[in-house]
Image 1 (cartoon, rainbow, N blue to C red):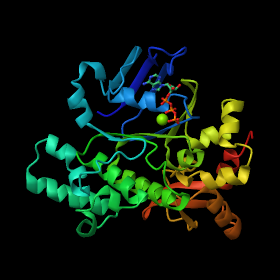
Image 2: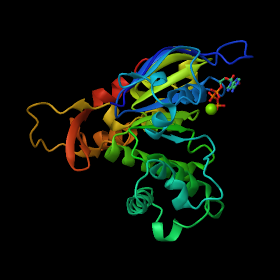
Image 3: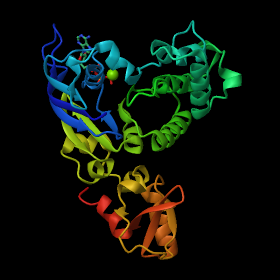
Length: 318
Ligand SMILES: Nc1ncnc2c1ncn2[C@@H]1O[C@H](COP(=O)(O)OP(=O)(O)OP(=O)(O)O)[C@@H](O)[C@H]1O
Ligand SMILES: [Mg+2]
């Protein structure tokens, strides 16, 4: 079980006047993608590092599945949790293959299995192994290095992956590409992911649910759709730019606003839209075809219906 549960967790650093994390409780469901979002210094990294015990809470408990992480052996725990740190963190004196192999080696996999895993992961993150296996981090672009960081975090096949601003140092276009890759990876792998960013658009694009933090506390914990349509307060409203409706629509994935397929769903001839397209695209299809609804597809499979009312509901109360 890879559910992560925070119960009244606080972290007070020794010489700080107020806690970096202050009485935080929330649950990250198994297989879900949760983003921690908030301004610099609000406690995102501190919260993340308490999950794999790089920091210990001053109060409260964190559970992985049913187990209190403090009852688990820290080394054991970290092998079950992939970790991508702020600023990449590849070892510069190791090749790409050696960097990816770190955890499999700790797990004492045999050489053949490790080599196969390296090739598999490099292919997955779109770095052809023959070309990149023996390069050093200094011989690659920032975006390529970040992809190695993601591959390395996946290497031991952990149930949980923690990512601390993994795309922080990357230009907007490459960053969007990496986000797309991460989303499609997650569709295949269904890991429990906790991802830190202070980039609002990144959070809205990637998250199943967003934890909005301010001064060590949780201000709102909801789906991107709910956060945009019902921001908890003015802080959230300002942070996410809730007042620009067109921008909002372009940031919300169709799948977070759609209704489930009705039981009597048959071939109804509605136009189709992909589940990871955004509501702005959906709106232009609906308006362009005058259809009553769109059938939402995941790969080729119908997974839901989206109506004009669903889209309008996403823009209320702003
Ligand atoms: N090791 C430490 N000792 C003392 N204070 C710390 C330590 N690490 C972080 N802090 C403080 O705790 C607070 C939260 O820091 P944290 O790194 O969690 O913020 P963050 O949300 O990740 O910020 P950023 O977006 O800039 O990375 C800050 O006030 C920071 O100065
Ligand atoms: Mg941080």
